Length: 368
Length: 76
Image (tube, rainbow over all chains, first blue to last red):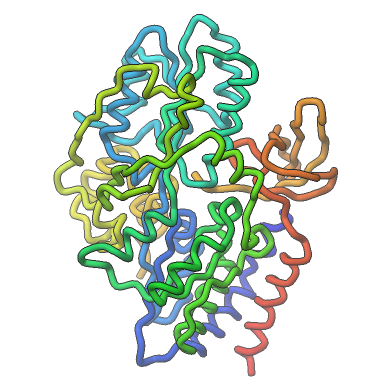
């Protein structure tokens, strides 16, 4: 497949591994945080960690929107879905995430709530058109990659005069999370960042420049294929060796410095910053999430329905919060593989196809 | 969640701003609401039913050349 198979070639991976081995300074340790869960999975799935010298360590970041969503927001969604007049639709990733009391959207669906999986926001609009007597709520999550499609749907609903379509907005922002990791009271030691792939196709590489300048952290925007990850690691290692702190773009086939300005304009038109938002593992982060602007209040589920803020706690013993900060690794969690498996997840990091625990469980268990 | 696949545009319906994209002959309907100037034959990144961006062929070739270059340096 064009633009996929070329970036997975085994011989090139071996050559890149050699180049990395020759470039690293044996006297130093390289701690590279891959922000995105997509990178975490590429690293485990293709055995990239095993192609790295022992002193190159990947620290898994919080870039998994399902993982960082606090349990209370899922409880909110389940409560909404219990209303008989309502259809709740969302992306598949969220369906099995544990809620309070061992509940989940999947269990709520089995219990009779009308909860449906969709692939695209266009499917949600279609559902609203076809069910004029029902309220259709789109439970929206995701980083900057996934926000523009929600904005398109809201604008389209407004243009069509769809009065039974609303959005429960949980879109969050990548640079705010990166800042929170760097500003944490007890920050995790990180030397450099593999920057987001598809988030950056939308926001561009420019928003990361402040982190390179202010925190002296090299950042390389990296594609999601294994050779992209290896090349980006090599670029980071070179920067660290040379004492440079810059934003470099390995994923130039899809990312520019300015990003997709059409998508950015749509997001700006529809959404405003929330003063703060809770992230699992990172706590309350200022200016880190979006809500619908007042002009679009008619399409805001939080305005239309009574949705009290729910404070919920995670399952005892689940290390998801520390794993999302990069402070712990999946194998540090006592629940991993014993009571917590993809079939019976205790924490969100085991559910999502971008979660670090799911990556470790699927590909990393048998590593030597 | 942020996963996106490179797909080739094989049909465009300009009236609805929708297109058909092909990934290894699997066809998927995608919205073109977030991109401008997409033409038949272009490769786009498809994410949750939307084309996010066009893929730049020249830049892809440059990145592949970088991989090969790293290989050359390592064999010296």
